[in-house]
Length: 308
DNA sequence: CACCAGGTACTGT
DNA sequence: ACAGTACATGGT
Image (cartoon, rainbow, N blue to C red; front, side):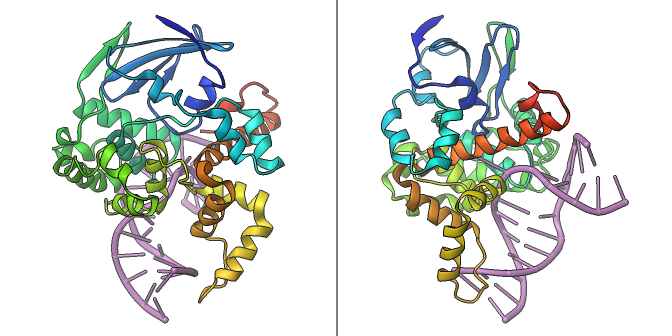
């Protein structure tokens, strides 16, 4: 077991902020088992110290958790106003993980027009159907399959993806036939716009999912995925600015606050690390919502469980 | 039984 | 470019 100080790090917020789906929390020991590709990472945080171990010697745990990011610099650069500072203060130490491109892409194809419990269920089913058995320190699960392993469409259909099954199947084929093009090194060479365009060629990958993949796997920290939560949060906090932008940019429409208006504004407003701002806003708005529900149910402490 | 969920693809203007 | 709409599935 490795023990090390974890400065500017909040394990719970990092894992539970919706950027990754394959983790399991043990309430008794406080350990999380995180499954990444074919590796299992067992990790917990006690105060400003983390303890972790990994099933693979070569797996780079520090890289996965973004320990190499210049946290102070990032926080400083996105702290543009009181609204975002409030979200940061609540969940200080939240980091953007560096996930593996294929697994991240597949996961977020599953995420479209769905909810987190079901996304998680789909990913587990896909892993069980096509992955290999893996085990670490008594924790048993399945590796996330390589794209070539997803070769049986009928079997994939049974994983509960609904109409997304054909998207994932087709994207798996493209990834396996063009693995070099979608490698970390190759895509990172491109500009944000070019990389996003490349990802959006994949079936099931639209603007929002592409931004998630760019942010969570390819290191484009300026990417700002806009889902319904972010749209609401941004409209609440920056409504006046967004409406103004939307009205100014209208050509034919009636100047509504579209996804592109929100994303465009946010990338300019928060800058180089806008994606980090997005993650704070997303997590904060979900926790706030959960707290409200918990309050009306008069069950304080059940906050996180209240929002699926 | 409606309605919703980390949107996307497709169709019309 | 932008507005509308169908879409699989499972949970309230």
